[in-house]
Image (spheres, rainbow, N blue to C red):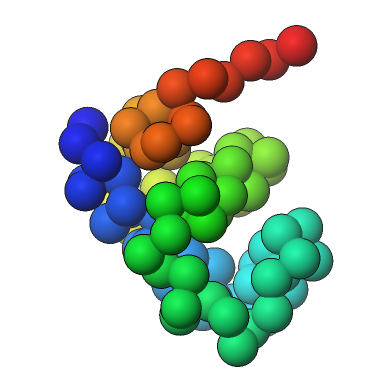
Length: 92
């Protein structure tokens, strides 16, 4: 996956999150962002990485997002790895 396709995927995930009040509220609470700053952060790779990381915190959310956006469930990890700082992922 390229960085550009990872950024596109993250933006699509954010739009999907925003389609549901509970989902976007969860993301805003987790990230510390406010609704007014979201659009301005879409070009920030660190923010897009945070969108992917939030998605990866909940398997059910990840599966629902991938199904709704028509991506295979391994896409978030691939997108994370393609974004700056995302390849340095450690489980411990």
